Image 1 (cartoon, one colour):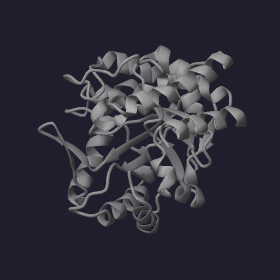
Image 2 (tube, one colour):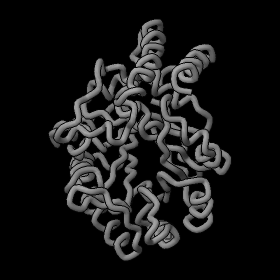
Image 3 (tube, one colour):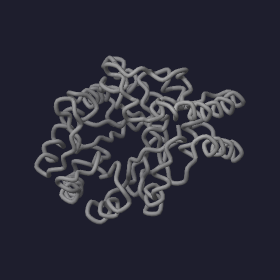
Length: 315
């Protein structure tokens, strides 16, 4: 496994990180807690030290709770990143950055994660009602108190990031980014982070799973399978167009003797400034396969072939 410094924090993270949103069992299908715990522990065993979670992953904080259980006796081997500012209320995602609420959120996350310090603490989303300034001031305060090692933001615009650097002294960002989702390259978010020594922890690196090449048809929306509400790749006309890009990944993967998922992850890691790519698998065997993306690099010709396929079909 390879490691990179997360921006100006000095924290070393694996270039492939484990995202735990699926462990909430309310968006990507049902996942047993025991299976999630095994996957987290296997991640640590193979050198994937970055475990990303959030209180909003699950109606009752299931993902954070699973992370806390999985890392007992292994806390010193893990870099925990979690978030605040998004709540689950009657099944809805509600954003709230009220400073008084944030203070309670931190203490609750520390308890669920069974730790006295969170390594990287993210504002999950901006909040139009309370704004971001109060929460950013708290990030700086939490770091000074030793309750977090680094503050960061997710889903912020460039202007909001400028405020976050000034008030919160943030060390990184968590934007969506994949072969299919290049919005945060185009809108300046990732370039701004790169130019200002901020770590970049991407999510959605496999486009909700479509870039793994595992889907022959879109998953049916039902029960806890809701990924198509967040990712528009699973509905027409994008489904067919994305399928042609996935075919390109399969072609490159076949020639190299690797998986399409490895190719997709490798593309993200090849983008200038990206520190680490989060992968939201819930099976140790898939985690092990995906982590292999850190062992090799796409050639310039292969990168160009992927980008040409994207432009032709989705650009």
